[in-house]
Length: 89
Image 1: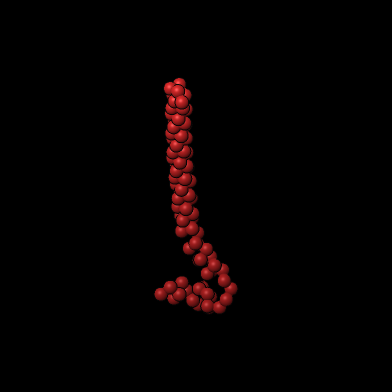
Image 2: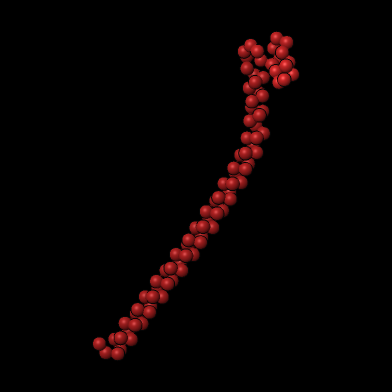
């Protein structure tokens, strides 16, 4: 091999190394973008879970009391002389 071919091979090898480095850099950027996206999705899910918890905290007790008052069986509060105080205490 003469000197000209060695220089060409070295240039090609250097170019290949730069291409591989560029590909690694793009892969790192894609990984960072994916992490950012997952972080935003997680934050949105946390906000929705918080809202769901607030709504459930408000409506579950209301649902319980509505069901308790609405049942049509004996021994319910307010029937046959029972009062709320006698049931709760």
